[in-house]
Length: 217
Image 1 (cartoon, rainbow, N blue to C red):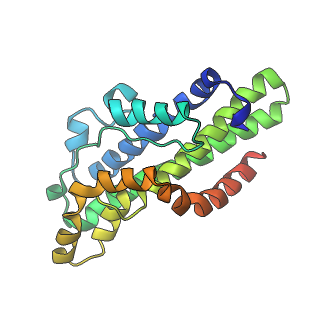
Image 2: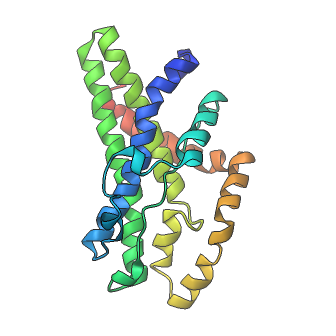
Image 3: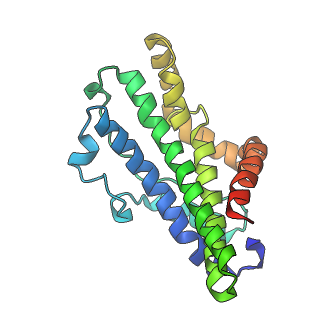
């Protein structure tokens, strides 16, 4: 349904869902870290939904912007990582796994919230009021599901790799996390070759159907 929008309308519709999806994801990491005994993010003022505290020029603005400009139908991004010191956890690997899991879970919760916003738009039945709610809701559902699925990939330093590390013996977790220096390159290659799109296509489709049904779309 986004195809009927102009470029300016797309940017207006997507900007808030993208920024909040990325920033709340990072806040969730810091919040769970604090619950587990690490106050690093809190002490640096990162436990806030103020996007200015989290914006990464490349990941929050340039990459999502280029994806919107090229009409790929696939938008994602990232914020500045919230600092976490696993040495403050009783069990560092397991603690990091819980911190990592918080990000995708926050995106699923936000997808549900955007679905309710879209449902409100459907219920209003006054086009000039309802359509912004519906379009923003669809964008919010889509970006949050994409972020949740991408971050669950077991590619260091994505959240899925931290969760997997928490399940591995210390030696193998250490060896596995050495791949982190190649993680961004691997992700870019998967994106450039459309492999990422094919990997995520089916889970994203079925997840969208579930949340769109909640939205009444």
